[in-house]
Image 1 (tube, rainbow, N blue to C red):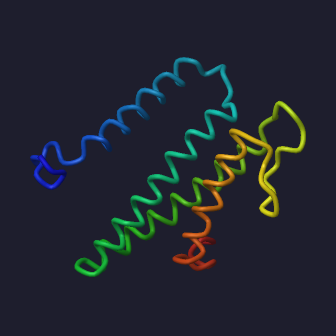
Image 2: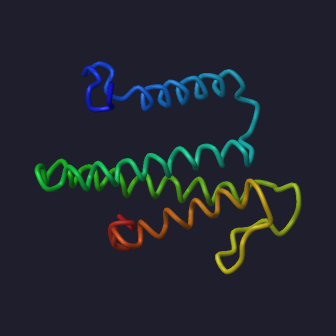
Image 3: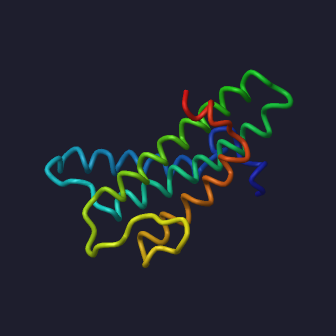
Length: 140
């Protein structure tokens, strides 16, 4: 069965599974309110946000020609997801690190995981944002 042949109720099984995982994680954190976020947690959350950002970008591109109003709303959601990912990236670098010197420096690669992965992912997403979004859109 190809992805296009899934019944309507089963059209997006992986997206539903990812959503269920996020819900489980949210419930788990609610029961452990005393534990602060750590860098690995924010790295994983940033990965989810940037993947959703890429998905919304594709959905907006495919929707806009036939349904311009819906495409504009998806583009707005795309911008908001970028703002959320940017804030998570900033929070990641404000958490205490195991060693000093783990800040995000675009002119050089970070020292190693998870800093290396989150910064590379963030810079790749920023490249897409700069091509498709105006500074005024990001500021609003």
